[in-house]
Image (cartoon, rainbow, N blue to C red; front, side):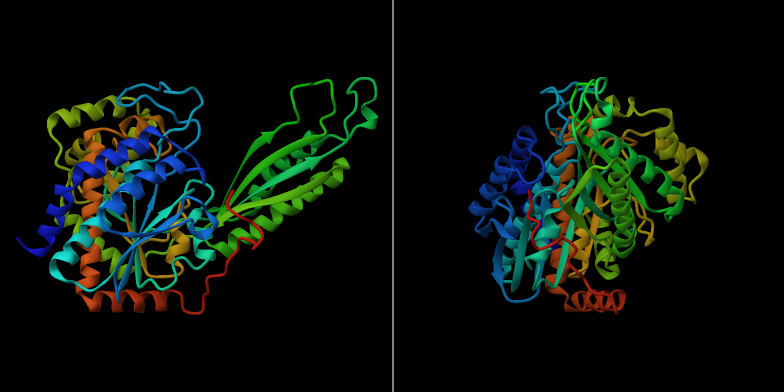
Length: 476
């Protein structure tokens, strides 16, 4: 048995402990930084496997760094375990049915994501022990990827300093080494304070905070015509001033996300949004107070590392699913709207241009995208990830692991329902193996580490990672 086969066998041999931990996290879904129960499963596995764990890093109670080994290279693997609000879902059910009405749910697969990172760390650590291999492996437990951006706070505090490279991954409905970017984002709350009054008897005495909030939103709508096409601005009402229509609302609170391909672009756009908030307050004679929430950088893929991941995805191979598992996933793909099915057809044709129309149609209509998508480096960006902050500090690569039903979306009840299935478990092991094999490449091939650093230096020549989260803003 060669070295890589041995690493994969180690992960298979220990698979039950990873699966049980991932299922437990699925059953205790927690959001943002309040992931007390979820992180315990990471501690349990890593401690029994001999890692030293530093808890409470980055001013976060439930962030950690688990370390084993000594010397260089120092390789980091990042993992997450936070859930999403409002995505509670009965497992294995082909329709939307919350376990807890309005409750949290693992609608982005982070129960699998984080435990695959742990599995990778355990797999490579065990192999290094067996072979007496030198080097240091670090597993990073990162809360609040969904909106609070734990890795950005960790980066601000120097938690990733000293790494030679970092590896990550994310659940998806396709398997592909990640050659694309992501959007930088800044998030803030805007609190408007006005003067209450009787809305019928003395409206002239009131100053409406709700009017101010609505004017801010209208102002941002007009801003959309004057920002770059790739930028995105989203908002939510956190407080609309109460339920009494006969009162001039004295308080209102908005939550804004401002995204763009680069951080400097996002910062420029954010300043314009701030001016609109100030203008809305001026028009309504109210007061506005901004509360900065979080921010994260755009992700920048390291080419040599990403290519190494792509090769290891080939070695690990497609998920070994039987017909029963493929049929199981049909309960979710049957819920995909026609527009979603057309999107799958289009992306399949784009990814595999040499296939016939019939072959493309057959692939697109399958419940699972078992064929690995080819690696393509592109500037295309859509969502945001705090892995971006890591990529600005050390050579970083990641991939998508396709164990979700084809055509379904992240942040959906379908992903939450699929999160404890045997398909998800096989996705966990596949991702863990891919990460561990890429770490092995770095530990045993100094040329890969050298090439990754040269690519990093070339990519970021003249650019510097500048912390954008103010010093007085703490994770919350």
